Image 1 (tube, rainbow, N blue to C red):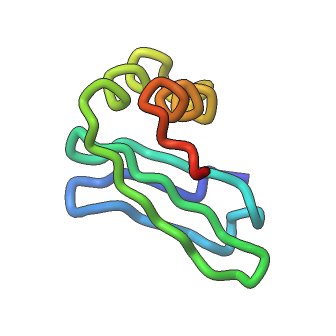
Image 2 (cartoon, rainbow, N blue to C red):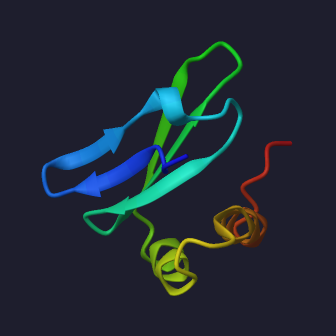
Amino acid sequence: MSYPLTSEKDGIKIRPDKMQPETLYHCLYQNKIMLVYKDQNEILNCYEIDDNEIVCKVKESDGRNIEKILEEYIEKENLRKK
C-alpha cells in the first residue's frame, strides 16, 4: 500500500481511502509538519506544526519516531491536559 500523504509543490495530496483508522500519518510541506489521521467515524483530522524545534527533529529522523518526538515535546513543554 502506498503512503496516503504526499507533499507536492501545489500542496498536500491526501488519499483517505489508503488510510487506516486511528493511524497517524505525516508529511513535510513548506517547513511544516502536517499530521493527518482518520478517526473511527471516517472523519479526517488534520494538524499543522510549524515549531522549528520539532520540524528539525523530524527532518533529522527522516520521519521515523515522529510520535516519540511529539511525546517528548509535550512532556518537555508540560502540555498535557490535567
